[in-house]
Amino acid sequence: MNDNKRVYKIPKYNYADQFPDLDSAALPAIRRLLLSGEYILGPEVTQFEDDFARFLDVEHAVGVNSGTDALILALDALGIGPGDEVVTVANSFHATAQAIVRCGASPVLVDCGDDDFLISLDQVAAAVNSRTRAVVVVHLFGRAADVESAAALCDHRGLFLIEDCAQAAGARSRGKRVGTTSHAGCWSFAPAKNLAAAGDGGAVTTAHGDTARQVRLLRHFGQPVQNRHDLVGYNSRLDSLQALLLAQKLKHLDAWNTARARVADGYRQRLSELPLSVQEQGGPGEHVYHLFQVRAESAEVRDGLVNCLQDAGVDAVVRYPVPLHLQGAFSFLGHRRGAFPIAEALAQQTLCLPIRPDLSERDLDYVCAVIAQFFGNS
Ligand SMILES: Cc1ncc(COP(=O)(O)O)c(C=O)c1O
Image 1 (spheres, rainbow, N blue to C red):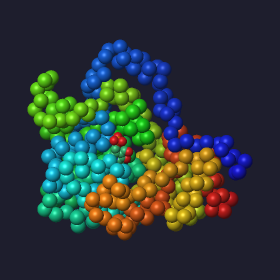
Image 2 (image 1 turned 60 degrees about the vertical axis):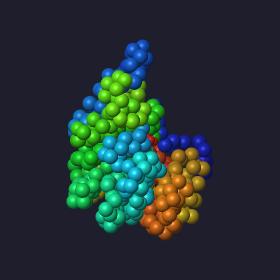
Image 3 (image 1 turned 180 degrees about the vertical axis):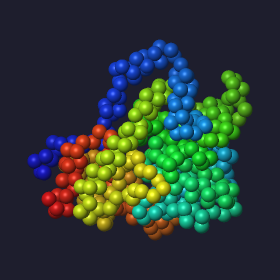
Image 4 (image 1 turned 120 degrees about the vertical axis):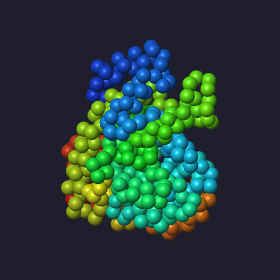
């Protein structure tokens, strides 16, 4: 293995593989767009919104500037603001809670499950009080949460359910695509995502016409028509260029997710004898493997393994090393270490192995041989 050190590289992303039709489709379409000048809210945006809504089987998709803005605009469109509490999970990317704060509401954090790494609905139920207006579930790492159970919990208490779908493009919960049955599904198309733009991009999906209308207004300076501003909005449109690329990539998304699942199976088989566990699959939520998380028995083992993989040219990373409640940005919430023990343990013990649709059997053999050697099993 040492002979291979720094020779064989396994990067996290391979953008060349995401453009099977680059010369025949993407570049001619980009050329047309560049010459048309319809860069903002052009026909490409409407086309992608229609395609994405059809793909998901949801009434409305509204393209916005990023996943962060999707969350902010959805919360705003639902009228959530100062004085309101929104329950979400400590084990997520910063943007989930940031959006709640940016709307003037208070994030109320809860812990996640030890096996699925997803928001604990029991803890959500316990966190609800008279100020609670909404719950944001996060389909973290590509694993869909149980949307139906979350919806039942919210319906029963008169709360909005918002899904942070940033990491789970195409995933299903109990057979239905995520982002289709709640009040709002919030999507990121940032370059690392399963469905990726060439820059920032996002969308809000919803079955509710009034929410879709409000997000459309908010994303475009509150303007229903040029020079009429009905409300104070944002500048948060999905660029036509990004929409064009997304519409082309969307055609491949299911096949790419199937290929990711094949890679995940390959990891599971090869790692089954080693002292590592993986994010649970099965149950109500499908996994589309935005990230493939493995969990070591301790922080020391995790850190040693990450270093060993990186030394061997494998792009292993930690997502996320510090849970939301221990980040300086959210210190005002007053949580101390120990508040959410599972999120804290995952932050110390998990790492992501490279996963891409085009990762080969040879790549899998190599990564898993490095890991086996780390544990002295080869
Ligand atoms: C769970 C989650 N929510 C929200 C976002 C924000 O998306 P964006 O980077 O497009 O603003 C991300 C992006 O990484 C994410 O992973």
